[in-house]
Amino acid sequence: MKRLATIIDFNNIAIRAMFTCKYFGDGSVQNFDTKEECNILVRKIATDLSLIIRTFTPDRVIIAIDAKNPWRNAIYKDIDGKGYKGNRLKDEDKNWDNIYSAFKEIETIFGNYGMVVTKLKNTEADDLAVLWRNYLMKDGFDVIMVSSDKDWTQLVNFDNETKQFCIAYNPIAVKQLKKLYVSSDFVKWYSDENSVTDIFLRNYDSIKNKLKNILSSNPKISIEEIDANLVLMNKIMCGDDGDNIPSFFEFYNNGKKKRVTELRAKHIYEALEIKSVSDLKDNANSGQLKEALEKELKTVIDIDFDKRLNRQRWLVELNPELFPKEIIKSFEEHTKSVENVGYIQSDKTTMENILKGTSFLTDEHKKIRENSIFDDLKSLDKFSKSPALF
Image 1 (cartoon, helix red, strand yellow):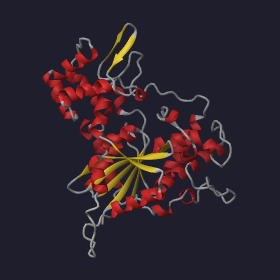
Image 2 (cartoon, helix red, strand yellow; image 1 turned 180 degrees about the horizontal axis):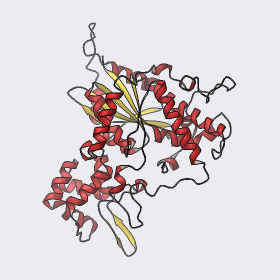
Image 3 (cartoon, helix red, strand yellow; image 1 turned 135 degrees about the horizontal axis):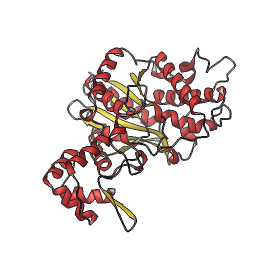
Image 4 (tube, one colour; image 1 turned 90 degrees about the horizontal axis):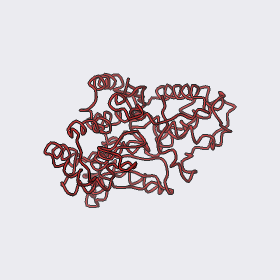
């Protein structure tokens, strides 16, 4: 019997809950100066997370949490001295001490409820996503990653031999639709109607059948096919302003910044027949990438291409081979300690059940309607990148 696991980006969910809980039918929220405002925040996070869990009813639930001082901070500084994600600013009107305290309390509650809560020193949830993906797929799980962070889509894959998959779910509706990002091989497998089962249930795939039932009962969730290799290559070549990551090469001409854009990168991929990061590396070593980039940007480029490619990969690529060894070691120790954790009753996971017995849900507290605020808001585009948490 195949099994399904979800890896949930806690900070991504929690920050959006913070910005949207003032619309929640639980009372007015301003700056989180009061205990009750923080209680509302905790209930909102629990509501949004429980809805996700009930939607997919996974066999195992993993909560990935950002830690302070991510290891990538030491890799890059811009001309203003700001490093990786150093351009993110906090809303000074909000009581961040109270917010962080509320986050910490609900992290503990999730753990007590039976979910795996993973937070490792100097490690981002992005790093934990790929480490957990690899671990779970090796253990026979199919994986659904939950985050609106597009960085996670570079981890989407499908194993044609084992028929295992990793797909990414964005819980924020855009134009009334929530996206489930998948690979082309996944689409072929999912759409294959030739694997009809017989009376002996041969060829029966429980997870495929489960996904079909989920999507048929949730018309606002749509499948979108993506190329994970292209997602990663574009991050390497074009950078990411939201994370304060520069493009592979940029310069000023007559006071205007010129950089590698997705269109320029596309021209380079086509000219050099680049389809993967390995191809990028080969072309950087041969000098062909330099020639193509100079032609595209119409300027002379005097940099060490191998060194620059390494910098870009460290900043954006979610690849354990690029991670500090101590992170890998910490993760291996962590998985041993939570080997039998995370197997919860997904279909029974509600906000009330998660918070039962805590001060956040009292007998006097009215029952809150179980829905996600993301369905009610037309757009949360301005929250597409979370502010700095630490």
